[in-house]
Amino acid sequence: MAKPVTEFTCNACGAVHKKWSGRCVDCGEWNSITEEAPLGTGPGKAALGAAKGRKMVLSDLRAKETPPPRKSSGVAEFDRVLGGGLVPASATLVGGDPGIGKSTLLLQAAAAFARQGLKVIYVSGEEATAQVRMRADRLGLSGSAVLLAAETNLRNILTTLEAEAPDLAIIDSIQTMWLDTVASAPGSVSQVRASAHELTTFAKSRGTSVMLVGHVTKDGQIAGP
Image 1: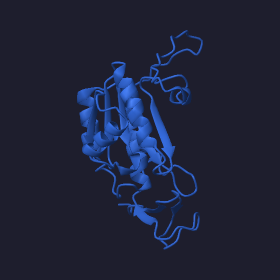
Image 2: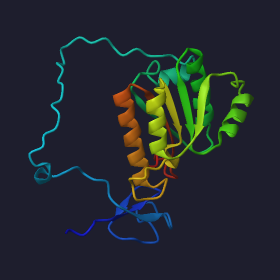
Image 3: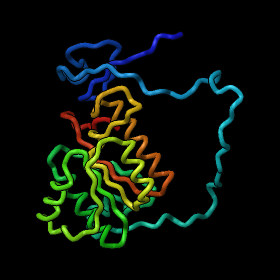
């Protein structure tokens, strides 16, 4: 049996190393390298055997299709960044420095979409629901029909989203999410990438718009996805 392959990833910049060291040679950060099992690259040809996948449905580039409808939040700059509004089955990453106002902006957007009749779920992995309500009170949004949850276990989050079928799900933040199928700590590059992949797949398959909050590193790069 082949020996399991592990790799060492810097949690600050995402650089991958063959062995552990106290300092990342790429970004210079100390004590940021952790051992992780690499993400799978998919089964090899021999592993597929006789089993076949499902044939894809192909469409002609020349075919005329109606553009997906967009929902405006009413926040001009926010809608402009989204290309004119929220698109169903889309996954959007909102990145920025910690404390810059990402959570406040998305809570305002969530309330605006809820006022238009959209079902919105706001999942916070960094604050309790009481803290989110306090921020909503300060912003004058306490009467908005936004559903709140405080959770970091992605399996529980996806189960809830499948049952509730919201129009918009906001995950704040992707760095706090964790999957029990990934053998690394929450916030590690492997966890962030795997969690972002699962949420993006959910958005595409269920038609739910998903917004992910992502923090940036010291170099200005979004950590993980």
